[in-house]
Image 1 (spheres, rainbow, N blue to C red):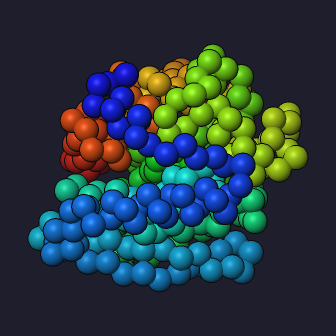
Image 2: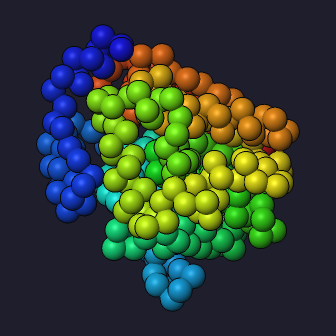
Image 3: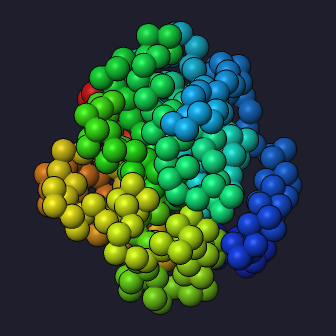
Amino acid sequence: MDPELAVIASRLPRSSLADPALARQAIRDMFSAGAHRLDRSWTERVDVVSTDVAGADGSRVPIRIYTPREEARTGAGLVHFHGGAFVIGDLDLSEHAASRYADLAGITVVDVDYRLAPEHPFPAGFDDSYAALCWTADHCNDLGIDRTRIAVGGHSAGGGLAAAVALAARDRGGPALSFQLLLYPVLDDRLTTRSVREMLDTPMWTAESAVHMWQHYLAERAGQPDVSAYAAPARAADAKGGLGGLPPAYLLACELDPLRDEDITYALRLMEDGVSVDLHVVAGAYHGFDGLPSQLSRRTSAEIIEVLRRWVALS
C-alpha cells in the first residue's frame, strides 16, 4: 500500500452498507468534516445551475450543470454520475469532481442526482441516468455542447452507471457518445473474481460492502442468471454482441480494491471487441483513494484531467 494512503487508512472510520440510513449519515458527517478544506476558487470561473429533467416514469431527475466561462469552453460535454454504491451520494458530494472537470478541462458537466436503492432499486437509477443523457443530447444548443462530443463518466457506482448508459445508447440507437470515463467502476454482480474473494478488509470498500450493495440495488435478483447488463455491464461482455460499438474508454482500477479484477477484465473485453481503451491500474491504491489528501491521489487526479483534455483535443 502507498505509505501516505496507509496512514490515512488507519484513521478512516469503519462503515457498513448493511443499514443504508447509517451509511448515508456517515458519509454526510465525513464530508461535512472536510468540506471547509475544499478549494472553491473554481466558482469564479464556472457557472452553476441546478434544475431537473423528466424521468422515464414521470419522475423528476435533479441535475446540476457546470459551465466554464465562455473563453474557456471547449464545446465538449460530460454527463456525470456520482459514486456511492447505488445507495448513498448526491450532487453536493460530487461537486468537487464535477467542478474540477469543468474548470480544468473546459467541459460542460451535467451532474445527475439519480434515485437511490434500496428505496428505488434497479432500474430506477439507471433510467434516471439515461434520461439525463437524452436530455443533455436534446439540449446541446442551449448548453453550448457539440452533439458529437458528449461523454459519460463517474466513480465507482457512477462509473458502472456510465458504462450501462453507454451500452443503452448503443443498443437504442443513441444518443451518440464519444468517450467513457470509468473510474474504478462497479460492473459485475456475480462477485466471483479473485480480488473479491481475497480482499476482505481493504480500506474504503470491502467484499462485504459489494454484497450489501448488490442486494440493495438488485434485491432478490442479485447474482441470478437473468440480471440485465444495464444493471451489471460485465454481463454484456459475456453476451452475444459483447462490447463492440462502444465509445473509447479510460478505465482506472485500484490494485487494492475488490473491484480490481472485474475492472481489468472489462477493459480487456472492450479491447477484444475493438474498443480503444486506456487502462491504468494504480499500484498501492485502494477504492476511492483519489479523493484523499496524498501525492498519489493528486497525481491521479491530474492524470484524469489530462485524459479529459486529450479526449477534447482529439474528438
